[in-house]
Image (cartoon, rainbow, N blue to C red; front, side):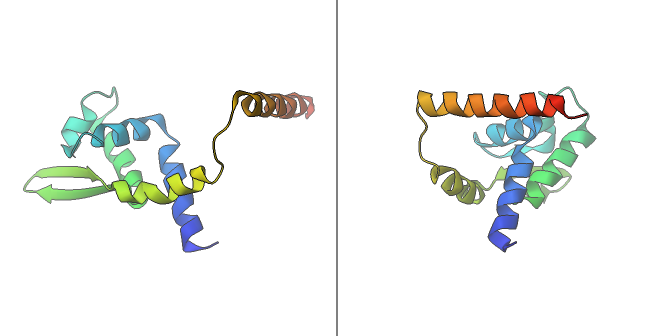
Length: 115
């Protein structure tokens, strides 16, 4: 596996969680403190910090400390490889999506038959 593949895996793994996607979306509006990021979630500050650690390891978030306050900033450029990878698939029309849905339904039916 190349470094680029590993980085792409880390990016998609970090974005696989809805809480982390919400944090990234919030950071699109600008830098925030960890406390501000945690405010809308019904989870502990420690849980938000764990999500931020995953985003930081993936290179999506940069954390800095100013005294006792930890600030978070989105590194928007780190999302570029994932965007380029997704763009390679082009756009899908309704017929393509229907075919994909049919194919996925076939796989689901097959999985149910397996003990």
